[in-house]
Image (cartoon, rainbow, N blue to C red; front, side, top):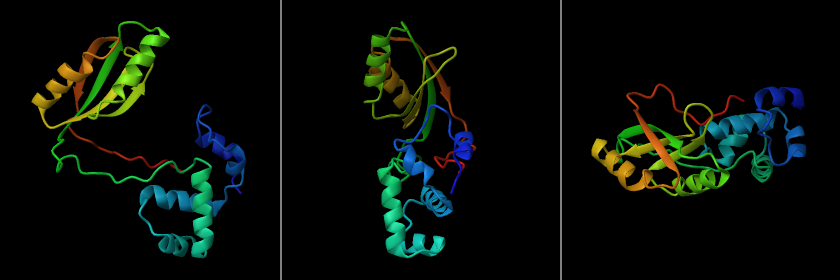
Amino acid sequence: MIAIQHLEMVMPALIKPRNLKSLERLDDIDMQILSILQESGRTSNADLARKVKLSPPSVLQRVRKLEESGLITDYVAILNAQILGFGLMVLTKITLESHQEKTIEKFRDSVTRLPNVLEVFQVSGDFDFLLKIRAANMADYERIVRESVSPLPGVGRIESNFVLAVGKSTAALPI
């Protein structure tokens, strides 16, 4: 069994799974399953069972429990943005005009609806939000900012940082 002290070192204090009791019962096989699935979510139940040396029904039961506990939240396909015509990635810093809760909520609710905005982070520091935006090219990005981002409620300042190269991109946690 994995000790809670170890998990507290791995997990930030504010981010706890929905069901802490199920987390207390994680064993090495559960951790292997999580590790394998976060590297390749398409791993079949039979392959997963072979890799962790358990029967397929036992593995399926474990995976379902991991899903129900909230430790596994989704399975997705990672698409090639370049091939699909979204070759420009921009990290966009947004500073709001006001820091009133209503302004923050309106901005956050509005920006999450924009299809080209892939990720939204509310941050501390010199700006309020960091957006990860994908566009076809510079003209497309300019259109997105002009037509979609600038008119959002509460936007005071926009600063664009164009990604020249990606050294690492993963969603895999270091478990």
